[in-house]
Length: 163
Image 1 (cartoon, rainbow, N blue to C red):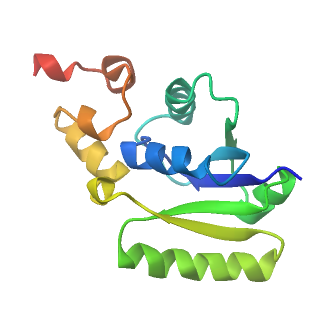
Image 2: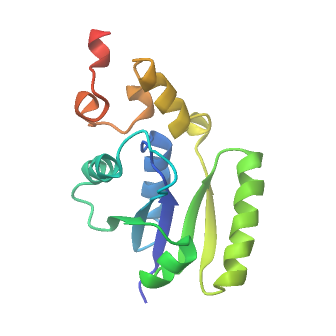
């Protein structure tokens, strides 16, 4: 049986930390579904379409990484996509407490879906999408926090080299 994990998040935007966790997850799972959650009550920094495009561009040519959107419970999305695991990254002890609580509730709802946690590499423990958003909002150079090869001007509307 194929081992499929769902890596859920808003990915607004995808960071080097996310990229690292996804690539490390491929050492454990046959496939990883990067599941971009859609919250209609929340306006994203990047439109969902741009987030999908950005993620697909980063993982182009890697057929074991699938990018999808969802707007239901993560555990239900897992069942719909034959995924047996939810992959989550932990940067801090606060992340652990938050993720542990969610994992326990998910397990009570759908015992057939288990959660797997990977610790972020130390160099990525302070990198977050909200940090990148703030840098970009002030026209700063956020490239070191984003995966290589992203067309910064296309996705974020300016060239940091011209700032």
